[in-house]
Length: 330
Image (cartoon, rainbow, N blue to C red):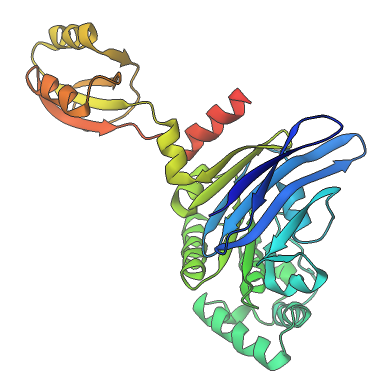
């Protein structure tokens, strides 16, 4: 949980929204701004990432997501604002508490897999013996033990991605940041890594997950923030955001010998929208939007008196629907 407070920039008189840390937030970014020359990459962006959550950081290409991730990783510094990790201002020693899988992969192609993993693990503070033990666990778990003496250049893109995933999580950081983690994976391996991310969350890790794959957001994320044109335009629990965006619309599938009469009766009483859903029956398919005075039970009662009801489901907006609508409106 977190609070917003509002102050005003004395030069522009625009409001600046700040997030006050609560005990269950692992990472808080407060009013972070970053300029590259005349281009503003981030404009007063604030987020709070709860401990033990998978936090979706979303946005179109060029929105500012990667800039924020680079600031959290201390690759670049903000021009304004601050970042707190576990209640402390971000410092160089916090590097050991963060595991980062970048979209641009950074393995040394001519090095052997085992040598490279040991080297990178020791950079994160592990002793050689501890690194070997943890690497054995992960190599056995992912069934990649025979890759130890191969060079990275001998591996496929998906295989190299597995190695980079292992290196990212090996030192058991408090915060994991995955930028397009499923890039290069076939569906089987993408599902394998998805399950590993969920298990890491269940074991106490906190995850920032940046992706364009909205189906992965649906499967993984508890909270999301959407950045568009350098500004945060949406933020909150995914379930709460879905409630905010739903339109009281229901998918309805009916069967009747008097198809035209049934449709006309429905249209005379309710707002009917185009339907795109599929089902197994060749029947009447409608999307019906209710006003505030009509309950779903009222609609269902009306329909059962007109036809045989095969399908009756509330339309819940997907993460993709929310993404597209928010970007178009901002």
